[in-house]
Image (cartoon, rainbow, N blue to C red; front, side):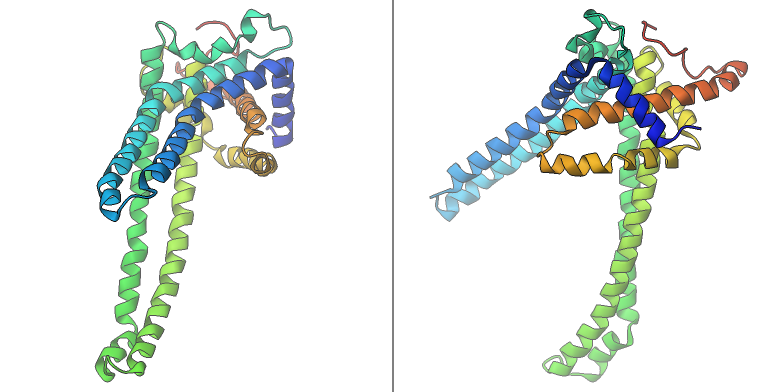
Length: 313
């Protein structure tokens, strides 16, 4: 069984095969992902400052809906770009990382490999596969968010069952200090219970979402090898491949925490290195897991993925 240090060492060896091209491809990928958010932030700040500054309150009230509409349009644009562009770029980036090897020729080093998923005959299938994954992540996020109704309900139950809360209304005049003191004591207990339950809900939601994220993580890796798969197949294959190793994958992700902290001090610039490094690490896990499961999948007639290689499938 693999270890985090072994995987990271293999990942470094892979990206060092063509480090300059890898970093440039990572820069292009991150630049495309960041272009719209940066543009929106810039336009929003400038428009808010120039439009609102010096205006009367009535003018600000009239203009504010336009600024809010700009936010809605930005959110819609980001959703559309995620489904139709960003997810496919990730498949192309994974494909690019998978081609890295010491004997690479100049053609294979092209940054154009990022757009591999957009080429003829691949786009619709890969779009469907990545959209299916994205849809399930949204569904799980929505389902798990319902858990936050629990602390709200618990708060009101604890509040109305608290003796101090009922005592405040039964024995004290609302115009006296004793009333508010007793009411506050009852509310504090309910708030403490609310906070504890809310924290438990955050932990529970995070566990479920991270479980699903790691279950679906190989979807793009599968599509980078088999772009012609039916819509649901890549996700199902990813779930099979990650079964039983999600905690190990989480620990592998956690081993990058030092790099992520350093990235904060470089205002995110270090992500140009972290992104291919992490992608290559999970690619190594993907290849090892594929070889582990291949005998059983071949014997059952449900081969998980073609043999490791960099050719067209």
